[in-house]
Every structure is written in structure tokens, then in C-alpha cells.
Amino acid sequence: MRESYIRLIQYFLGIIIFIFIGFHLSLFTQLLGPGYTSALEYHEVTARMRSLSYDLIYIILLFSLLTHGFIGLRNILYEIFTSSRSRLFIKTILLIIYLGFMIYGIIPIISSGEGDLITFLYGG
Amino acid sequence: MGKVKKIFKYNLWGLMGWIGGREFNFERYLYLFHRITGVILVFFLLIHIVATSSRLNYDTWYLFKKIIGNPIFDFGMLIIMIALIFHGLNGIRLIIHEYGFLLGKPERPVFPYRRVLKSRLPITIVIIMVIIGLILASITIYEFLTVWGVIK
Image (cartoon, rainbow over all chains, first blue to last red; front, side, top):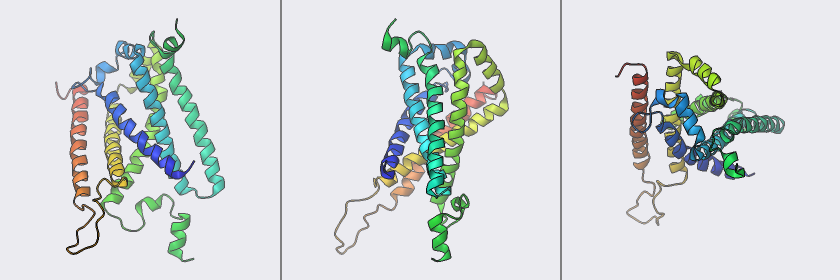
């Protein structure tokens, strides 16, 4: 993929993150949500886990943050290691870590609560 | 090839290039902090993904809450929040600059010459971002002071 496209993706995801993270963090303020302490109570957490809309928001956030973060990390490492061999190594390692964390992060989101995505998609 | 050219072509300074090099001005400080906060936030994200996965089980969640339930972690969280606010607002500033929203319409260079770049606007954008950042940081600090019991 051309570097210019990667940069475009980086900017686009940055805006998406800015919007969704604002929503995510509003939960932890008493001005807009239950507040930092209350939002971390188990019944509050499970209530969010059961909500389909929260599941979707968390999936979008997880994908955007991981992609944005790993593109950024790749750019930094590419600046430090300039040979094509080391860049291939960096690309491979980062892709493995990226996919690993994506799967690890997505499993709790889609498999939690009664109104989870698996139930929504497959019924029952 | 000259020594300076070689340094820039092969990035021989590595990480030192972030703080070294030419034209070290205000934007270079923003660039430096953008990178540092970016790296911190990526590592925080990975820890956050692992930590929040414990929510599937009641006991694991409370064990996780017990581990993070101390002022050192709260202070770390506050630092992360401020890093996030800085990184986000500076990112928006970068997007505004790169897409040329601050450029005026191109004009013929006819007397009296007018500058196409609205030169005061970049500073205005920085000031606006600083104000928004201070508001968001104040909300965050207020929340943490409430958690610590400083504000009732």
C-alpha cells in the first residue's frame, strides 16, 4: 500500500478515535456519565457489556486505536531502522502483535452479556 | 556525499533526530511530545486491552480493581489522560495544517501583494487547541480530585 494512503488512513482513524474516545471517556466524568468510580463497578460494567451499541462502539474503538497506534509505531520504527530487511522484520512482527491484540480484544466484546453480538448475529 | 546529507539520508541520528537537527522551534516541541505521547498511549492501549478483558469474570474484575485501586495508578491514569488530550488535539491541529485549511485562495502576484497564507491563523489554531486542552484537562483533574476525596 502506498505511504500516502497509509497516512490518509491514519488521519481518518484519528478523527474517528477523537469522536468515539470522547464518548467512551464521558462515562468516567460526573458531568456526563456515572463518574470514574461508579463506572468501574461490576454492575455498571456488565450493563455496558449487555448493550449492543456499546459493543459496536468498543469494536470501532478497538480497531481504530490499534490500527492508528500500530501505523504510528511502524512509522517511528521505520525512521530508526532504514534497511529493507529490518523494515520487513518490523512489519511482520507488528502485524503479528496487531492481529493478536485485535483477536484478544474482540473476544470479550462479542462474547459478553445477553445482548452481545453473537446473539444478535446468529439469534438464540 | 557530504556528512550532513548522509546523516539525513540514512537517519544516522536515530532517536536523537527527534531532539536534534535543524530549525528547533515551537512546532518541533509539539512534534516531539506528539511522538512521545503516541508511544506511551500505544503501550497503555495494549495493557488496557489485557486489563479490560478481565471483565468477563466477577472475581478477576475485582482482583484487577484491587491492583489498580491505589493513588499511584490513579496518578498514572491522570498522566495518560493528559497525554491523550495533548495527542488528540495536536493531531487535529496537524490534520488542519496538512489539508491546507489555513491557506487562502491562490491569487496573481499583482501589486499590492497579499499573502496567501493566513499567517496568524496557525497561531490562532494553537491557542484554540490549548484552551480546549485546558478545559478537558480541568475536567479530568476535577474527576481525579473527587476520586481522591480532595473535592467532596
